[in-house]
Structures are given as structure tokens and as C-alpha cells.
Image (cartoon, rainbow, N blue to C red; front, side, top):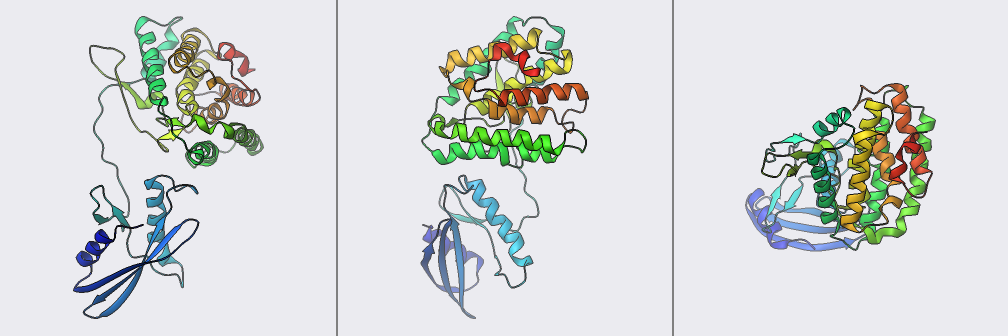
Length: 350
């Protein structure tokens, strides 16, 4: 349904000398519904249609998904000969009012400022350590505990769980989109396809586990975790929650833990020292805090995506070719096993 009262207010505000407004539903389909708006004005009668999209499935699950569809419609309907014209994109606000968001050339996000030092800083310093110090341990426990806490909030939705699996492979910001950003010559197209096909097989394996759908951050990597100055050295603030609020907990777990593997390869050409201790401690603490004993059977697909990210020279040009090969070995090997054994992480580089 649409908010008829607010729609009437919108037309009275934006169309001059409106004397009468009639609204009726035209019909519904798989994707959404259409509503006929008939208005009487000084110069005669005019008819318009308002289109809505259903809020579940077909990639329309979040309001931002539906907004992106309509904004593209507004931009492109006019560019195809014989196509009906789109007039505006309307947003219903929290108070029920209707406002226009159409016509923008570009869009911007205004946020609060965050002060602190990102976790990349800690990971760089791990290269100088054989073992973690007390503050390092506190930070790992704080991050693992935080994830366990947010992941404890569950939601019943097969659609959203399956979407997270699908998006991890096919979204423009995820595996296939990141592969498309690789410079030529880094990895053969056939090997990109092989990793992608193995990942699609993992989608089928994970689909039955939709009961695991949880609240997630969605991009819990070190650049989005900023530790702030306070009496507690493990206090942090987060940036850039991405790609929807619901998904598989392994998405967040791997977004962080891949970095213990990646930084160890970059600095030591193997997984050892403080990096290995950090990886093991993070998994141990997360499993202890969350009680999620299934997590190591869920991570392969998400480790593959994150491995493709950190091996991308667009993001990390300092890696050598042999180091990238170690990461790709890790991706292939983790996709080839049913359960990830983090205590034997070094073996996945072979």
C-alpha cells in the first residue's frame, strides 16, 4: 500500500492549482504494485502512475535497494525512444511525509567524525613481535566478544541469508566485482573462473543453514575498526557498515581474520609468530564467546572472497608475485575442505 494522505499533500505542493486528486490501485505483480493518480488542475485532467517494489526478494530487500532501482529509472527512462517518462522519485519519511529525492547528479553521505587509530596499525607492528602483548590480547578479545554479541541477534529469513551468499560471489563489491578490477596478467581468467565456480558450489552447501542468519557489520576489516583513546585500551568505534545488516556471521569473522594470514604472508612469507597467535586466539575467543561451534564449517566461501580482496594489487601493490600465489593457494585449499582448521593454517598455503 501507499500513504494516500501524504501522496495527496505532495501533489498539492508540487503541482499548481490542484482541485481534485483520485487514487486507485491498478494491480500487483511479482515485483510490486502500481497506483493510478488522477488529478484535476486548472488546465484540465492529468494522470500519473506511482510504482512500488515489494520489500523481499529479487535484490529489493532493503529500502536502499528499492531507491537505487527508482533512481536508475528516473535517469534512464527518458533516454530510450518511445519509453514513458519518469517524473520524480518519492521517499516516504519516518513521520509519513513524502519528499522528492529525484534529479540528483550525485549523492553524498554525511557522517559523524571518528577519532582513533585503525587496527591496521596494530597488524603492522605484529611483524616485530614473536608473541602478543597484553594490550594486543585485550583488543582481540574485545573484537571477538563484540562480534559474538551482535551475532547473537537472529532473524528468520531464508531470503536474506541466501542473498548474503549470492552477493558474496556476484555483487560488484564482492568476489566477481573485485576480480574484474584486477590488472591483466595477475591471475588468469580461467583461474578466476575456477575460484568463482568453487565458491558457487559453497553457496549450495550453505543454503540449508539459513537459521544462522544474524545481525552483522558486513565489512569488519581493520580499516573500519578504530581504537580510541580512553581508560580502556580496547575501546573501539566502527566505520562503514556495508551490504545489508543481516547475513552469515562468517562474513564478519573472515573479514578480520584473513588479515592475520595476509599480514603474516606479507612480512614472513608464512603464517607464524604474533600473526598465528592472533589468528588462533581470535577464533578461540569468538567460539568461546558465541558458542558457535559450526563457524569453521561456514568460513570457506567468505575466506575466498576476502582472499581475492587482499591479493588484489589495486589494494595492496606491495605484495610480491610469490606472496600473491600463497594467498591464492590458501583460497583454493580452504574451498577444497569441509572444515577450516585454524590451528593448521600454514598448511593451507601449500
